[in-house]
Image 1 (cartoon, rainbow, N blue to C red):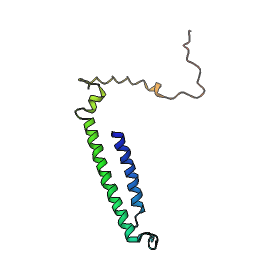
Image 2: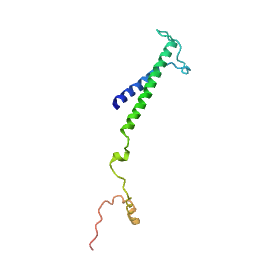
Image 3: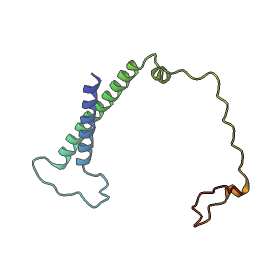
Image 4: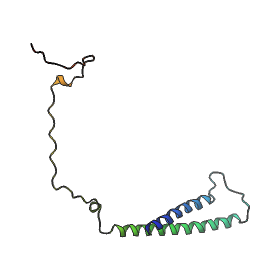
Length: 123
């Protein structure tokens, strides 16, 4: 049921976008508009498109509310933590101990060409 309403909702959204883009700009800010001829006059076309826009908008809001109600019924009485199935730890684990700082000589980068392993001398 939810998938059917969602598909109708998406089709209504695409239809609403298309109808709004077909409408003529009121201000003519882009310099487009004017002339037109055809079967319908400019005023009749604007009235028809505005009625279709209102129908699509009302249907879009209706499907939005329906989807909200379906989602609320689906998740009624449950929490996100209930869905995870894990419990929150009662106590915190202690932080790991910080390692001891090595002597200053160990912090230096290796000397180039000194790739031979250090072997203690048996004198």
